[in-house]
Image (cartoon, rainbow, N blue to C red; front, side, top):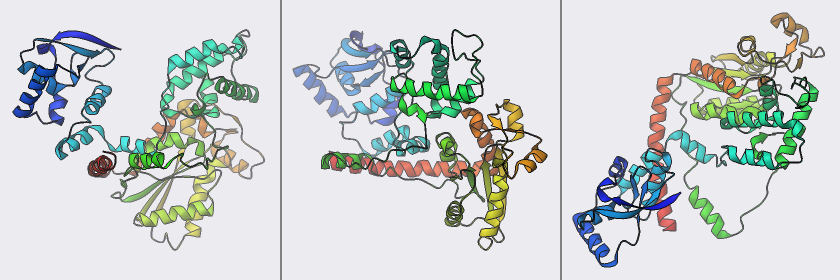
Length: 450
C-alpha cells in the first residue's frame, strides 16, 4: 500500500547499496536540479520504504536539502522494507532512465545475477509458488465436491504448500506423502483412512482432476509426462517476435562446470517424471542425466558415449543409477554397465567404469520407513534372484521417496563422486562469464530498443 506522508529530510536514509551502484551527482548537476525545483516545484515525488530508505529520488533529495528544505511530502511504500529483494529490484528499476556508465551497468549486473538464477531464467518457466489465500478461497467457493472430502482436500492443500519448491508433483508422489498423514477419505467414516491400495489411489486421482477443473488447484501443479500438447503456433506479429528475441538475447550460455573434474559423472534414472526434482541438482552440479524407463536403449547408451567423448574421454566414469526396488529395477545398474562394456568395448578400453545404485536401496527403505506399493512380480524373470539377494517380496517405487529425501540421497552420492573445490572454481569462472555476457546483452538491448 502506498501513502503520502510528510517527513523530515534528515530522517530519510540513503541505502549503502545506492552509493555502491551509482556515482554521486556532480555539483553542477545538483545546482541545476535545485534551480529547476525552485522554479517548477518537485514534479516527481520521492519514494521511500516503510523504514524510510529512499529507492527513487536520491539526487532530488540532495537538491532539496541544498535548497534548505527540512520537511517534504514523500510516497511511502508500506509493504516494502529496505532489506528485502524487492527493494533492490525497485532501486535498480527507478534508475533505468538514467544514462549509466559501464561501471554502473556492471555493478547492477553483479548484484543481480548468479549462475543458478541465470540458469533458472534460461528455462523460461512460470513461477510455481503457491498462493495459499487463493487455494483457501477456492476451497470455500467449491461446492461441486462433497464436504465429506474436506479432510483429504485439506491434506492435499497442505502437501502442495509444504512441497511447493518441488512442483509440479506427480499423483504418485502425493499418494505416498498422504500415506504418512493418517487422512480420512470420508469425513463421516472414522475408519476410512487413506491406504496404499488401488481404491485410495484411484479416488485421489479423480479428486485431483476435479480440484483442477474447479480451480481449487493449478493445472501446472500436477505433472503427467505421459500426455503432452505440442503447440505448433507462431507469433501474432513481427513486433512480438522481435521483442521476444531481444529479451532472450544471450541467455542460453552454459558453462561446463564439470570440465575440470577428473571423472565424467552422470545420473541414469528409470522415471522421467522425477526430472523437475532432479534438475535442482543436475543443474546445480552440471551433471548430465539420462532417463532409461525400465532399461537403457542402445540410442541412450550411444548418446552417453558421445557426450563422454565430447567432454574429453575422461579415464573415470561414475554412473549413478536411480531405479525402483523390484525384480526389474534392482538389476538396471548391472545390466547398464554390462551392456556398455560389451557394446562399446573399444571406446571404453582402459576406462574405469564405476556403477553406483543410489536409490532405491534397502538402507533407504529402512531409514525412511518407505511404503510398498505392491508385491514383487513373480512373473518377472529376475524374481527368484531378487528374492534370494534382497530377502524381500515387496516392491518399492522411486516415487515413495519424498522429494526432499530423494534430493538428499542424490546429492550425497554426487558429492562422493566430485571434487567440490574444482567445482567451486568453475562456478567462480561461470559467474565472471555471466557478468561479461550480461554487460554486452544490456548494451545490445539499449541499442535496439532505446
